[in-house]
Each structure stands twice: as C-alpha cells, then as structure tokens.
Length: 352
Image (cartoon, rainbow, N blue to C red; front, top):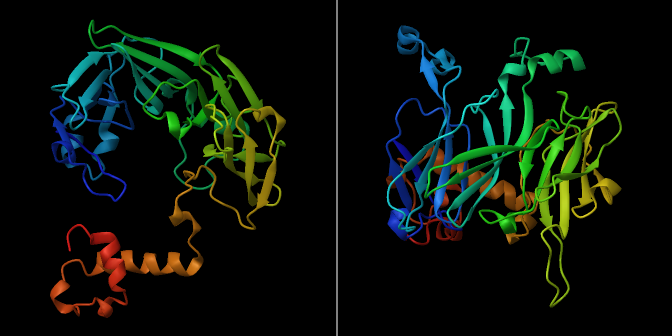
C-alpha cells in the first residue's frame, strides 16, 4: 500500500480525512521522490523486476531489483485528504531513450485538466563505470563523469480527462537540486533554480547556480572559480516595503559553497532576479560543510534560536525518544528528564 500523511504547522495530522490518504499500487514501489499539487500527491513508479530467490534471501533486497529495459513507468495521482477527487489514478508514461527510474521533483501544479510536473531526470545509461561506495567517490573529472548519471530538467504533463501523458526536456544542462520559490509550491511557477555542472550538457559535479525560465527556456547562470563548488540552492524571501507586491524572483538564492583549496565552506547569497551578477554576500563558515547537504530557508521565530535553546530542544528530543515507554517512572512535571513543563505544552499541548 502507498500511504501519504499530511501534517499542519504543529506537526499534527490535518483534520480532513484524518490526514491520511492510502491506495494500493501494483508492483515494487521503488519511489524516489514525489510532488504535491492542490488536489494530488504525484508519484512516478519505474518498471522494476526482482531477481527471484536473491530478493527473498538477500540482506539488502533493494540491490536485487532491476529497472526493466524498455518498460513503461507509471505516473500515479493520489488524491489528497479532503480533495474529493476519488481514488488513485494511474497513467502510463511514454517510453523514450532515457529511464524514468530516478526523478527528483522541483514542483508540480494543476492547470485546468492538466497536471504539470517539473523534475530533474537521471539517465543511468550514461554511467560507464562502477559507482564507488567509499571515500573518495571520484578523484578526477573523468572518473566522476563515468560513475555519475546524466541529469537534466524535464517537464511531464498528464491530462487527467483524456489520460494523455507527455514529457519535454526544458534544458540539457547537467542539473542538480532543483527548487522553486516556496510561495509558488503546488502552484504554477515560472522559474526553477538548480546547481549545475560547468560543462554544459556533459556530466560534471554541481558547481554553479542557474535560474531556468520555464516559459522561454532561457537560463541565467553564475559560475564560481574552478576550485569552488556550490550545493543546493535555497530560496529566501526578501523583505518588501509596505504595499509592495513581490514577483516570483524578488528574493535571494542561498547556497553553501565549498572551496577545494582551503577545504572550508561559505554561505553565499545571490539575488534571484540577477543570478549572473554573482553573490551579493559571502559568509565564511570556518569549517567544511559536506557537499550536497540539503537544507531550506525559514523566517520563522525558531530560526532565531541560540545555541543554548537548540541544545535544550535537542536534549528534549533525545530524552523523549529514549524514554518513550517509561512515562510512569517520571515525575509529573517531567523534571526527571531535565525538561520544563512548557516543553511538554509546546510539543503535546493538543493532547494534554
């Protein structure tokens, strides 16, 4: 079964439908990512076969699965709780030269009877060498390109009335970590921000930052020095003047940049409406942050926590996890856990 849970800002299940949507999906659910529209959770399921007995006895059954060559992937639309859209609908994706086995969603939205999905699609057929399982994964550009998939930005569309599915490449540039302005998440967007390689359509590590215009298929690109490598772009809102209306790209793009010479990282800030102008701010972090680290930007009050507050809340989480089945051994004010009552009210107020 495929189950999707939806939570509100307090991490409680939403009231509609108990916050849960469930459906039965045939075959192996090798699902790497999913997107959300106003009414649907969107999944792409590749055609997967198992190596019989190996699957049953292997300690790592995932390694006994193969993507069926020439088989069609399925696109699933699972109605969200409270949407009133009925049951799961499944559509067959047309087969082309590339696989739909690893698709990373940037955003999805509904446009009338059509669901639109922009995603970074990986082509494992481009891998000519073995993927390394220990550090360093690659010590040269040639080794990296032979062991890494070709990745490009694609648009999938499905007409829920006719069942027609199509896919179109938006750019052939080697792309990673696609994101949109969160304000247009699950809504129609124009721009997608990605980390890109330095060799155009050829395979290369994530290094620069690009803003792709999905309307005219143009790109605004900034590329750092040859020894600098950017990670995932993160969109941050810009504080607007009173009465001023923000455009979709009226914000900033944040990314963690790793310097291969100093082996230290920086937080860089670029204007989302002028990526090619380069960073307007570079903040040294003093340490090397793992390249490829995922993150997001938040303007919420919690992001202003100091080290003491973070430590206290981390302590709360660890204690709650370790003593989850021992509540009867703890004082009524939870002081035995080293926690304050307001901790419990904040996290469990709806149940106390």
